[in-house]
Image (cartoon, rainbow, N blue to C red; front, side, top):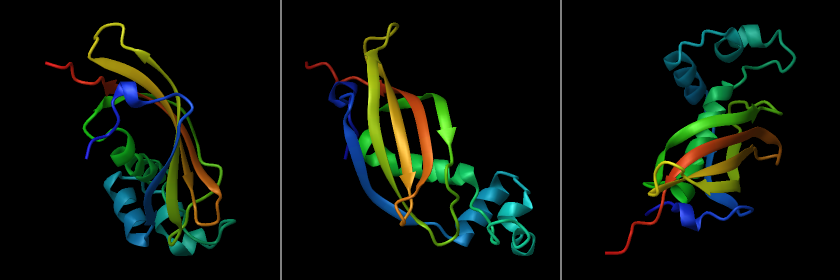
Length: 152
């Protein structure tokens, strides 16, 4: 399995990633603990009952990481040279334990690298969507992608 090379990424293309994942309480507790985020909104069910949603929210950075990971096999598996940045991130709806998420990506733009002809730069928009078709993540990022290997 190989991701797409720079030349294979067409601006305007929309990829509906087939992997989905139901978020569990364990996911949220483990990620929140590993990242040392002690906010009770993620970890304390009794505290969360006093807030508008009445239950713990899934850590938004877990949501971003999960959606980002779902995109890898179809886009950049073994063709990515790393992220260059995130230009925009928003979480328009919350994620809760038991929500099932899916990902979609639009390739926004691309250009050849100015410093290395073996790579290019690609702009992506990733969307995370729950089982109710609500947008839970909108993320624009820039990545460095390998170009097709030169023929011998």
